[in-house]
Image (tube, rainbow, N blue to C red; front, side):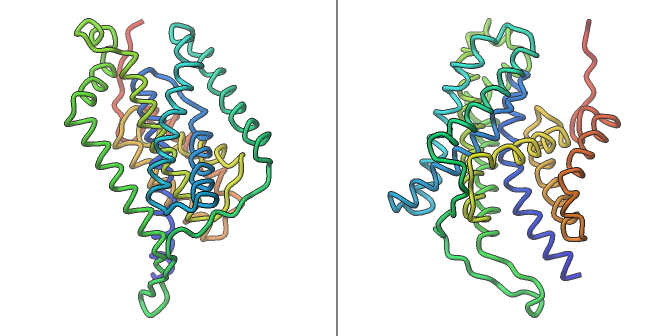
Amino acid sequence: MEFVIQQLINGISLGSIYALIALGYTMVYGIINLINFAHGEIYMMGAFVGYALTTFLGLGFIPSLIISMITCSILGILIEKVAYKPLRSSSRISLLITAIAVSLFLQYIMVYFVGPETRTFPEVVDSERLMLFDGKVILDTRNIYILGITVILMVLLQYVVRKTKTGKAMRAVSQDKDAAELMGISVDKVISVTFAIGSALAGAAGVLVGIYYNTINPLMGSGPGLKAFVAAVLGGIGLIPGAVLGGFSLGLIETLVSAYGGSIYKDAVAFAILIIVLLLKPSGLLGKDVKEKV
């Protein structure tokens, strides 16, 4: 029993990171029906910004987290303006290819400037271990940091989406872009805000991964980025609660698979889940089947 509890703790921490990245995927898709495959690289950039701030400037964890989120927000807006906005009226395949190109560009521009080496993230939070169940279950304070910050960011996101004018505009554009524009809503502004918020959450996930695993590298965004996409589809892409559910579910599944001797197959399991969900319920666990007129 204690073994299962330990893996649940680890799975919730990993799921928190997947959920933060998945939120960016689902928000962008909900607004402009774009799978932003460069989102994993924004997460990677957040990790490197946090690394630079803590290593070279000596900043603490919270200031580094906030600055990383702001930096990734700006990066997300720039990517949208430069790469996606000119192609907004183009076919979906053009946008998809562009997203993949942006992803590879960000990966190898970082390899060029900082090198491909793995770096050790400094210990900016005190790592204390709490022994539970007579020492059979270990709760690291880093797990508490990750879950706490994830919950705070998700609550703030829900507040923005549900209680502010910006959130109301985002929901309007998501439902009917043309009608929203006729009502005086600036669609371009809403899209930029959506990219900014989603990128900020990815940046936060990058810093949290740094303090959790203590290592970062320029190619670190590919795997988690794809798995976060799987999480978004699992929960119901375009739905914020779906991204959260998918992220935590995938984190728990992956951790349990690894714990029971299947660490080699954990990635295969993640994508097998994607295939099964697409076959049985393409709209995801929380999604609703919508008939499309043709």
